[in-house]
Length: 233
Length: 358
Image (spheres, rainbow over the protein chains, first blue to last red):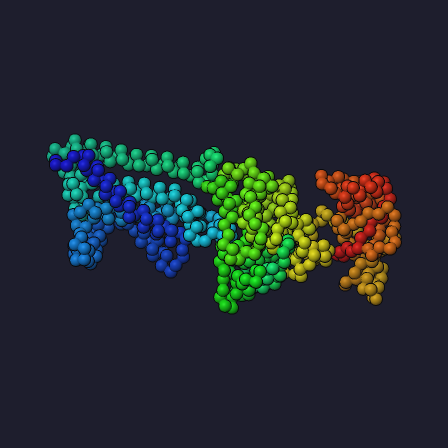
């Protein structure tokens, strides 16, 4: 064993964190247009953003491989133009984790935006506020619980990602071997029992901590946003 | 000056509205489903009419012919909705301040910048400024909405039955506040309601609306008296006497109506000799005199006896005068009551110019 548990943990956090850096903004944008806009292919976009949730992650990894891999069109373009490749790299793992987490981010964001009363939007328009200010004053604050819930779920999902990652960027210690992959590798070894236990406990601990933090933040947030926090803001 | 000439869908039926409202409060009175809210929403730009134009102080807000449409947030208006629309995550102060942002492209008001705290105190919500709106009462919330509509000095203020969900006490407070503040405004105020009482208290002019059709605009009293559909006349402030048409005076287009042995003259309209008719007398239009008075332009006088006097909390009292045994409600000032020395059992004469016939 050349990579310590701590290094594996830090790598997992880095990959999941990087995944959220792009998946939360994209997920917010998707959630926003799904909640607030009506257009011809609305149903298709809605379905597409849900697909990674129900598709086997291995299949998601395969699609990524065919599109972003060295032989795929986008992968080839990236390699030719920028000499950049996702293959066997942690950045590829961040792409896989983000894709798998995306539906978990879009859904709560979309629900929280759909929950905003359009009457409040009208009242702000009447009071002289244009679309951008209405977004900043109304939709953004009232959708923050959705962002937190989706972000935490997505982060935890990204931490635990297995199938898409191993298919897309393989299982390389120190580069693409996240917690789940390390547990899998250790469990294949005859002497890996102890390591499996430690890694497993770390994974469980992380998940519980993530959910606990999000529950706490959400409770505080919803009290504040509904004006029930008793604070004289 | 607000000029509206539009046709719009109202869910059920079609709204056809032509309206020219000047500075001051204009009440739009009609039953629910008449299209009142649709009209206000079209003026606010919250819905797009099928055809027509909307102009305010010479600026065109909507012209379906040319496709011109000024969005709601550029119209510089204030609006109080049927239900309070406050942002739950902001303080009352911030909710009021929301109305303070004006782009000056549509509004023509010159109401200046009223101090927020001063305005809030005036509306008895000054002590709530730091609170969140969630736990405010319905009446307090609507007064916050009123403050938001007033704070920006909008040239046009739209009120869509703001008092409808409130209990009597809170409704009274809100209406009192509106009477006071609207009187000081250099703005066009449209006040939608189904209660003629509210219109009478607040408005200078009034127009009826029914089934999507806007009637003729006129001074509140005239429009209230002009009759119209029973559904929108509040029985609380008027009394109906039964009479019979004795004859029609063709030369003056007057009907002579006998109420027992007493006689009055009203506009003949479609009345025919011999017809039984109700005569509706409005409490606020009745004058009480101690004895019959000749030499008045008000031609109608009915003798009766005071049966009860109930003091209001303000300057006026309600006096019930039995005319042929029917108690007729009259509203006069307390001062008149005292100066005339009126009391129960006193013989008096009710004088009035007009009444509605039904």
